[in-house]
Amino acid sequence: MLLKELLSDYKQTRQALLAANFYNFETLKGITRAAALLERPVILQLSESSIDYMGLDMAVSMARSIIREYDINAWLHLDHGSSLELLQRCLDKGFDSVMIDASEKSFEENVKISSKAVRFAESYNANVEAELGYVAKLGQKQESGEYTKPDDAKRFVELTGVNALAVAIGTAHGFYKRKPVIRLDILNMISKETPAALVLHGGSGLSDEILKGAVINGINKINLATETKNTFMKKLKFLLTHTEEIDLRKVFPPAIDEVTDLIKKKMIIIKPIDV
Image (cartoon, rainbow, N blue to C red; front, side):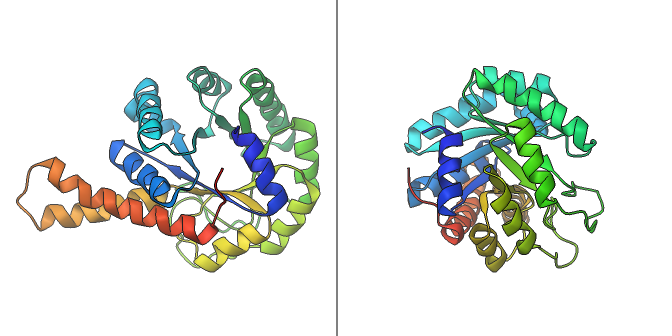
């Protein structure tokens, strides 16, 4: 099933799909193994920096290979694409979904760029995600009070034709410095105003109750990035300070296990259906 079709179905049934970023083979294995163990679908996300680190061909080859090995329903997604050129490269390599992030530009410029992304993706039959509103990135001020307006979301989707829309309801990328104020009421209004699947960025560190509430109120895709790499690195740091072992084939597996446990927990919380 095409990802945009699944997300459209989830929009109608108030369900959500976990979208987890991977950074190397180990985090990729931890994520996909969790999906295989629970027999759940998953979106595998690559950011531009991860593509630069691993190389586009290598990252795609690893993802496709492990999807086949575990025999899971999974889709490859570009997270926070900064340019149409990058989107084109990823689509040419077989990505199922791409995100164009022009959220820091004016509404009109965001519409213009996102519309071009939709046209780019048409011939690939790929899912296109955009972002509207202020979802703080790493290093940016987390408390902005700038939420996505329901009317703006409706107009934005109508003008661009995007399949999925990341909305600002109080979340932020990275870990939260203080308890966030998540506006589920605004989310619910946005969901009623637009047919696009809604995406929650900044899923790391949110409580189980907030994640469940987000799904109930209209979120169809939940992004998880910071918590995944933090879980892997915390376990790895602990192991490296408590052993003289130098064989990475013995040191890495427990850290991979931690990622698997994290992803399983998140999948159980949001309870997506099988496809």
